[in-house]
Length: 101
Image (cartoon, rainbow, N blue to C red; front, side, top):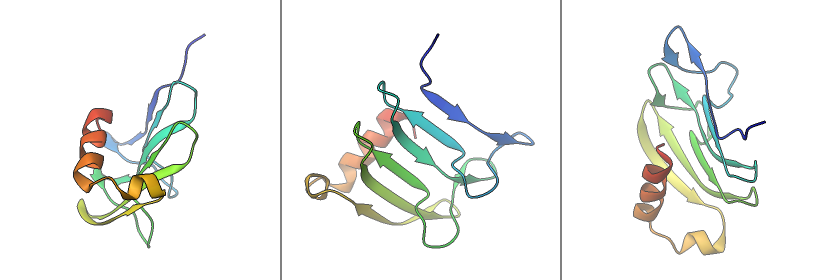
């Protein structure tokens, strides 16, 4: 029996998932979601409406940061907890790079 650490969905060879569901989910070692990414064809970060295309969670399952993208262009970032509000956007970029997002 193993531990689920990473899920990805593809449609016709493109990194994508129908129905406003994340196309990529990464998990902490305790089974809670670590990160979700929403993409449209070829892995371009994008989410319609006023919804984040990338969400990072702490080990307790609380949102740390949400990033909003349209057609692969980041429009803004929301830091959810008081502790996370003190971190710079660069720190979250480094976390994302570490998570390979």
